[in-house]
Image (cartoon, rainbow, N blue to C red; front, side, top):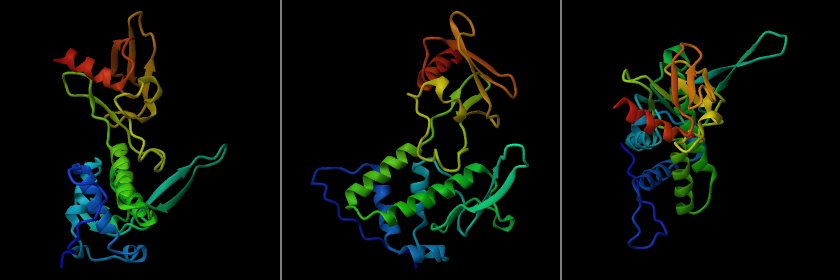
Length: 245
């Protein structure tokens, strides 16, 4: 039987309208608080909850929500040791949340970094709700802030063929789950998070000419010159959109 959630009581006065993200956060909080931490750790029957609440919450934060299922998954991590062979280890991706997205359970691991990142993100959000005892309005706003901070910067289309610079994967084991690139970020200071397709080594040439700086892909040679007065990703996207059209 699907769990029927009771609407949360908030202290917002009459006439104050909750945004869609507020409502999705409130729904997620009600679902998570319907069980204890121990119950979530041992949870095994996805038919006992409204999976639409989980999917909607993942979607609004630009996380993968396909093929939601129950299970645990481990990820591998390599540690580089100076003058020694690299060490490999594994760690549990979802320690409390029982949810997986688009994972081949028979393989015992994830198929791509984005899937693993979404599983980790949901685990963090579920633990956030369980661990915080503040009033509901404060918790809703905390989750809304995390959702907004999780949303990916839109792709920057660089040519008529549709090639684009996009925000890279979570390469620091969760450290930038809530620190996404923003249109207001300065270009030269945030290249470690930028990808070109499957290529993640993007270079920045300041003063490539008297009038232009250059972004370039070190792996395939793509070069994207743009006027030196452009400083942020948002300005670059607008410039290239006008240039391509």
